[in-house]
Image (cartoon, rainbow, N blue to C red; front, top):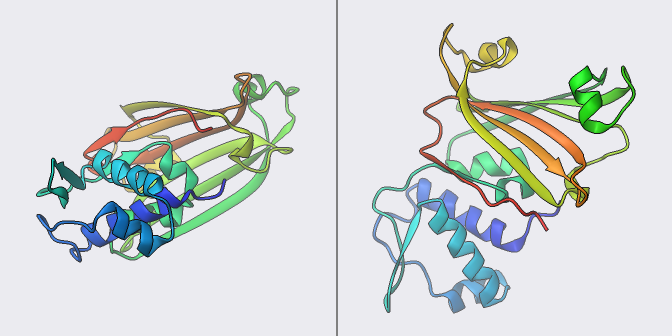
Length: 221
């Protein structure tokens, strides 16, 4: 799915704020100025500013403008991050060195996956493991599954996410360096077609101190 202009603009400002290029209290350019600089409409700029507000990075002062928040938090916002690559998402969250690696393989579907995707028992699905680190510190790992005839989430209309703190799988614990018995932040995702049929399922784990908050908005189209 192509990255929308408002996500790109918000990501650029998010990176500059978290890197300290735009310090706390500084006023952002006007909507018209950002629109002219970025070659987009005022509506697109408004969407970008709203995303920055949901992330806790900026605040609106009536009749004065938009200002960088005094204490920017790290907030995970859906579904905007689904419109970016993992590299772009994490680079927007900090100015540190981000590394992302992926392993892809065709595997026999478990009974649970076969039922979810309406496949025959043992039919193969695509399995993608994505690992991300920041300055060498592991910050995310995910297992994503989809039928072989599905290339990406372009067929998805809805995103369903379930957030919880729970014990990680052994593979996720090994990557994140989680001590035995420690919980992680997990997000279980189901990307759904318009008829409710799952086209992709993903399980993501983060260290519990990674995000201050999670923000959800589910419709993708």
